[in-house]
Length: 271
Image: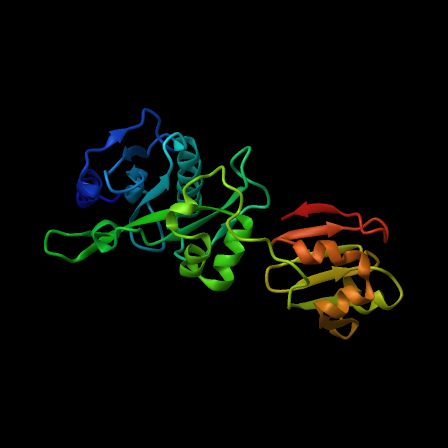
């Protein structure tokens, strides 16, 4: 456990308003408080995440900005990250969206989290020792739709905020996406076996960086032989097998489509 008292002091003083604690604790051990400054949104913060033992990264507390009445969404987001810190002993990465295959908030399009700097700057984001040396950070979580998360991955957080019309446009968890989903075939390579010369794809996986396709007839020995594989563009792949177009154009990272025929219908299998 981290005995540093600068974190509870920082959380208490943050935004210049006193904290209002929630009764429940995340994962049974991390306190949560709410703060509502006059010139900013409702902010839900952890008060104890910095004490969780981690193997990588500096100690952090977490914060989420939401509209009043959306506190449950903030708690759900914080729970996801705290659970990951407990299970994997790591702090959340900054600027790399965490994307889920389905919305994790029922009745919403919210399926991703993005750790960003706050609107308040270093005074809120950086936890300092009494002598001014860094002790850790407060990491602000943004609750995003999948399309917003993909946009942020490709263009960056600042471009997403500009596209959305400002950071306040990302507060309402009941919103429709502020950006449009990816359209068209992604510009990625496709790794496939040469059995595709005689047989259609059966399983197609999008890794986030490329597509992998197998016919289902490849043996382990066949797959171990590099000469049995080829690499083509995604556009060439859909030109050769048009029935995969819908999946390839809208696939999310980690999804695998099972095609039972060449009608274009498929079943998703998540990693």
